Image 1 (cartoon, rainbow, N blue to C red):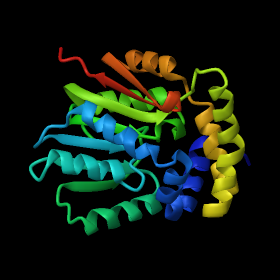
Image 2 (image 1 turned 90 degrees about the vertical axis):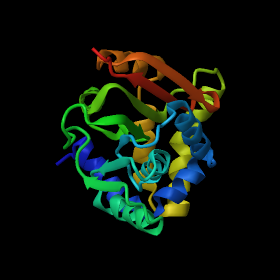
Image 3 (image 1 turned 45 degrees about the horizontal axis):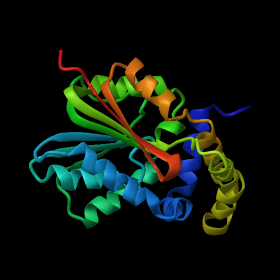
Length: 236
């Protein structure tokens, strides 16, 4: 029986959790760290606020948010892979962070009330969900009026020549790196498929607006191989 996208993605992350952080650095040549740092700067996270990191994985962005909101703030990280969360829990414990709660849950049905968070983020996770719009609407539901929802994700480069090189890298080189460094050729082959099929920057910005966000900002990184989308929930 053919697996659903949700089942396949769950299998991938339950298997690669031990190598996930290392492979992120290998695949992006550590550029993902600079992308997230710039995204956090643009978010301008305030002390004492409340944030949710959807598809938090091993909790790197969750931890960055926790450090930004400070001890009087509160951060939740949610992921559907128990194994990924175990790695995240260890990182939180090592940093003795008291303002972080990691939750096992589904991005398609966030287990939080309406208008709860000042910031909601999703980093390199939207491409892996079964329905992008459902998740965007759920993020819109749980953020407060005036709050920010931010997606940092792979994108589709538009520069001729570089675009073709990017697709070659994702299709052939990235799965090979997965085999060499993580013994997981099939899993990283799937991840390149999800990245290749993900909407481009303009299309995702339109989806943000369709989900109810206003004043949508887009920032491409490294010739468009990744992009940040930031939208606000209207106050009225």
